[in-house]
Image 1 (cartoon, one colour):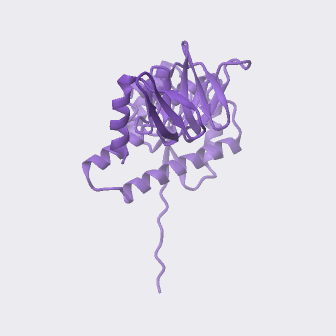
Image 2 (cartoon, one colour):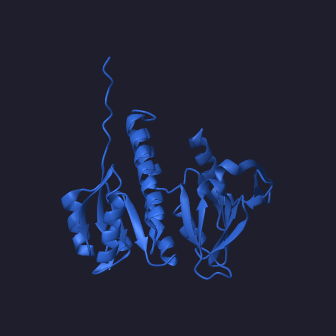
Image 3 (cartoon, helix red, strand yellow):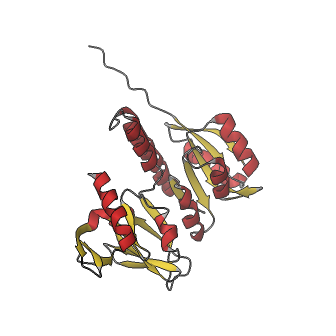
Length: 268
């Protein structure tokens, strides 16, 4: 009986890096990966755009600080939904939070080891496995379901956020699954998670823009909640409160109450 052969997909990588030594290091790392190949190299923002159009790579390794432009700005100008999946290379951890606003597959801080790069490549493989799952096992054939899938891809399962505190410029990496609620604190905010409370350097509106609105709702000018954590809504003549699984009581504004119930109704 003849055994069916499985064809392995080769991931086509474009390397955009201004340092020749770093490009050589990446080539040596990729040489030992049978399922990944480098299809082109570029060392400036202009060359990066030309190479994306010319080679149509599956994924781009993109330095943030390039001659003729910034890599993050380049992705935004091209269009986040149209630019290939991206691995950002940054000089400093403080740049990572900015890089993650355009939802890359991963973000690496220079200098990085071969082992760290292998971790990144595994994240790339997981990304494409998820995409294949969406492509071959769709939830529904309806156009509405396809829109939902496209929208879900815009939001990262992790947030990289600059924190306030003793370590200036520290970046917190938090899984959105662990977020209970977000609280506004003057010009900044605080993420309340399962592990504890994290004062952040970003405003509540900046955080809101990076969260999936089907899962997180702005229920008050000072609060965003994870809808999966809400267990009760308490309303009186003068107050409206959401009770979370851990017992936290979060204010609910009158103007947002109807929006909240409409959103929850759509999720059923």
